[in-house]
Image (cartoon, rainbow over all chains, first blue to last red; front, side, top):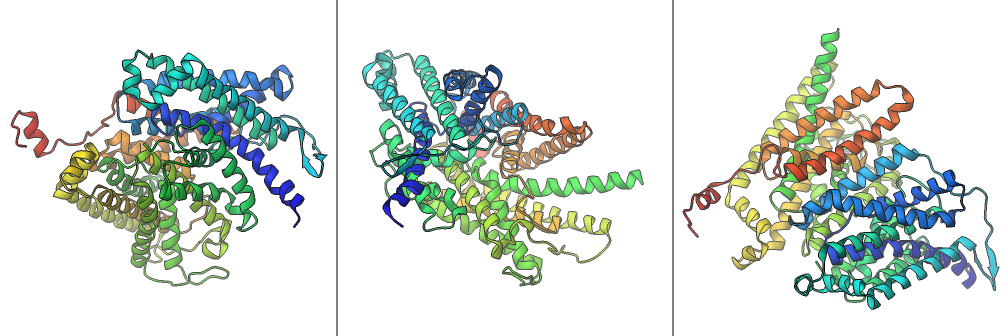
Length: 290
Length: 321
C-alpha cells in the first residue's frame, strides 16, 4: 500500500470523523469540567441537532449548510430547556444522580426523534459526490467543510473563553467553583452559557455526521463512547485537548481496520478510554480527574 | 379456555418478574449499597445468557459448545463469566468517581454486543443458540411453566435471603459507609477500591445469573432477544422506583414496572399498525419521563432504604460515636 492510499482511505476519513467527534467532545469536556458530571445524553442531543437541520431542509427548502445555524440555535435552546426542567433541581444532590437523569434524557430525546422522524435512514441530499483530487489527495467538498467548520467553531469558542468576561467566568468555575462563586460570578448564567455552547456544538457534530454519512436515530448514541474517549484522552476541561483527542480517536478508528476486523472498529474508542484511565487519567494535556 | 390463557399469561409475567427482580437485586448491590453506576446491565445479562447456553446445550455445527452439562453448571458458569467480565472494568474504573464507571459500562455492553453479533463460532451469530434445555426436561407446556416458575422463585428467594443477610452484616454497614462518606471510611482503614470491586463483581454475577435464567426460560438466545438500552433502563427504573438500598423495594419495583410495561404493550398492540410503531417509542419516552419524575418527587422510591439500628440511635439523639 502506498502513502496516498493510506492517506486517502484511512487518514482523511479519520480526520473528518475525528472533527465530528471533536465537536461533541468539546461540549462533553466543558460539562464535565464546569457542571462536574458525565452527560450521557450528549450523543442523542447530537442526533436531535442533525434531525432539526433535516426538518429545516425539508420544510424550508434551504440548503443543508444554511440549515446548520437553525439546528445549532434550536439544539442550544433545547439543551438549556432540558437543564432547566430536568437537571437544575438535582444540582444539590450527588452528581451521579444527574448522570442517571441524563441517561433517561438520552432515551427520551431518542424516542422523540423516532416518533417524529421515524426509524428509517435519511439523508440531507441525494446523489453521489465524487471526491476532488488535490495533488493526489482525494477529498470531498463536504469533508473540507467539516474540518473547516470544526476549526472555526472551536477557534471562536477558544477566543470567547480566553478573551471575553463570560468566557473567563466559565474557566474560573471550571478551575475552582467555590472561589469563582466567592468572587461574584453568577453561577446560573455560567450554567446557561455552558449549555448553549454544548448544545450548539452537539448540533454541529450531529449535522456533520449526517452530511458525511446518513441520519439514523441511533447515530448519536453510537458517537457517545468515542466522544467521551476523546474528552478523557485530551484531558477533561481542556478544549484543545478535546479536539486533539477527537482527531486521535477518529484516525485510530479508521486505521484500526488495517489490523482488526472492521466489525470491531467501534471497540477502538473503548480501548483508548480504558488505556488512558489506566496509565494517565489526566489525559494528554493534563486535565482534571473527577 | 379464556381462563387457561389468563393463567398462562400470569405465569409468564411472574417468571419475567422474578428474572427482572434478580437483575434489580444485582443492581441494588452495585448502586443501592455501593453507589456504583452500571449503565451496561444488558451486557452482563447477555454474557450470562450465552455462557449458560453454550455450557448446557448439545453439540451443534459451526460453534463451540456441546458440553451438554446440567443446567446448574450452566448457571454457575454464567455467574462466573459475568464476574470475570466485571473484574477488569471495575479494577480500572473504580479508582475514580462513578461517572467513569458509567461510561466504561456503556462501552463494555457495546463491545459485548459486537462480539455476539460478529463471532458466530461462539454465539452462532444472528441465528443465536436454540434448544437450550429447561431444567425439568420435557413435560407439558403448563407443567413446564409452573415448574420453571418454582425454580426461578426459589433462586430469587435464595438470592434475596443471601443479599439481605449480607446487607445487615458488618459488610453491608461498611459498604454504606463507603457510599456515604468515602473519606471517612478510608480513614477508618477500609480498603475502598477493593470493597467497591467486591460489590461490583457480586452485582454483575447476579446479573449474569438473571441472563442465564432468561435463556433457559426462552429456550433460545439471539442477539435480538433483548434491546440492550431498554433492558438496562427498565432495570434502573425498577430499582429507583422500588427504592434503592432496599432489597424488597427492588423486587417490588421489578413487579410494578414490569406490569406497567407489559400492560402498556398489550394496549399499544391493539392500535392500528401505523400508530403501533410510534406508540412503542412513546412508551419509551414515558418510561424515561417516569425516571425524571421519581428522581424529582420521590427519590427514595416506594420502599425507602430502611434506617438501620445505628442510624436510628443517632436520630433519637443517642450519639454513640
